Image: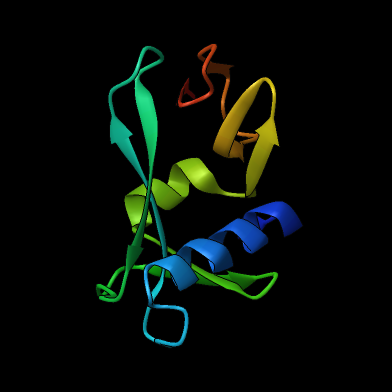
Length: 110
């Protein structure tokens, strides 16, 4: 399962409205893990409307989240959150599988 916090839900809904896709039921949040970043792996977050056969689909807090099977292995029980504080603004992931994260929080290692 991939979880979505209340703050992340609000920001996702706002961004979908700005992109004029809020009323399109086929759009969802795609989360994936890609190689790169100072810790070795990075998160990727996009809006998408095409599901692939091996995609894992979740819905939490009213947000549909889709990830590919390989990425899901790194994302089990991860929470998507959003911060608008002084220490940084943007989406971030609380990933219990990460053994190490970089200072900016955009990459991790397992």
